[in-house]
Image (cartoon, rainbow, N blue to C red; front, side):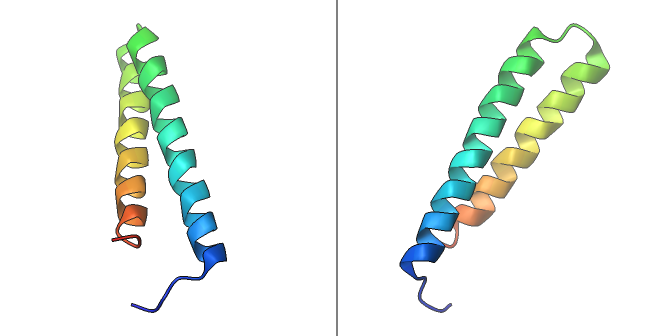
Length: 61
């Protein structure tokens, strides 16, 4: 893997933070949802955001 520039690191931080925020919001929405389909939609969104965040974190490790 090549070295990451400072701009690359800033962009990764921005993307990772965005996925964290998105996952947290969707988790709150899922907890409040009463319709099972809506609840599942938001739970799937949480899982997707978590997976994307973890993939991006691999570039830092």
